[in-house]
Length: 531
Image (cartoon, rainbow, N blue to C red; front, top):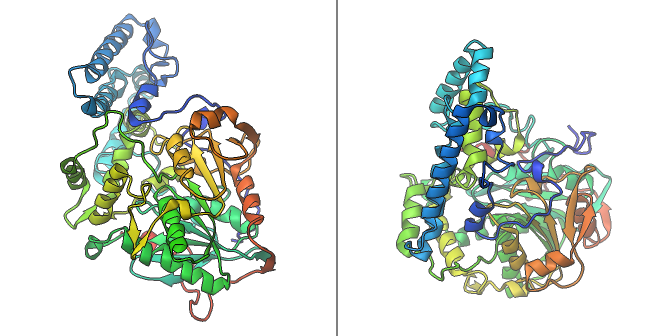
């Protein structure tokens, strides 16, 4: 399939219902819980779809069950905020209380779900038979986690990660993919896309029409991406330095030699943004003008200080690492995925469970869910280092060194394009904003009304919208928000236009590879399938 095919651009994400709404977003994990729908004085919040069935208001038995649950939920949540709890423990208590009350909602049981009972009666029990089959399938194949999408809905290289390209380099940590051009001429400066170390690279290359790689290739860029290997026990001691040295640092050398371009645009999503910014600072410390621009997508370079002033202890961080680890000295990517699910349990755990086990349904295929459940493991050393970096703000305070060079974010004087997500439950948009202010160059900041992952998938569509502004970024993100303006359109369009102005003249298109780095396996390569 040609990368310049005619596939229409489509859009959907896990937060489509909030599209275009600029409500005040959450700042911290605690405010994430506070911002979730709460029961009103006389009933559930109107946005709580669990109790939308008419039986909850018309049937006295269900009404009694509902108000009993709401009263108990208020009691539990109030206990988690009680003054007798140490201030630094309240956030943990609220996390546990929220997950407990979400798990014990009556709608999660057959008897407490009037829609499931009605479905069972209408289908003469067929929905219960299907639900039992779904439960057993999830128990065997997913360790009891309810499926968010039908199994085998997507296959790599067939309907996911399909942009044509080749592997042009491989080492023990990564593959470098170069995508085939689809224009006679391309921009002189190439792009290098860097993924987070806990996810597969193809968040950049989802289904056709929803692929950032495909979009950039069509816009006339030479695009490379890093595909990380699922690490083995022999890599359990790898730290950030090994990941930078054997990952993006080595990939940049490959990209520059293949394209004969002295500079490269760096693009990073989530933790990949940390790698991109650190790499730019590393080159700046060596007085090497190898980075043309930096694009950071939902990335945190600085973390907010705890409101209580007390940080997690070393023992707590070791316990968390141990709970998420496997025997091989690796942090299990699936357990990390479950931890993220617990930040939004109603949508990511209980709603799929009700649909699959009680209603006997299987959800529709969704490429983001396919990607999110295809996690990779993380070396314990890197995971532990990441926790300490977040707690101590090592990167933001200039205390990080890579290969002997200090990493100073203010030395990154290249222009930067930064995207944050209003409904991000993992990296709040204010954190991304404060991270952008640490960079030393001109920063173009964009706020998208979506979630952590959905905001990355932004092909042009009539309803696309984002906020941005001109000039320097004020210290308070709320002041920036008040002074920003709404733009109709996709940030993808704004981004490629912004890159084009910083990419030099057009040159003849480049086929994948060269003599030193020959094109080998077709994209998506081998490592994306590694386990």
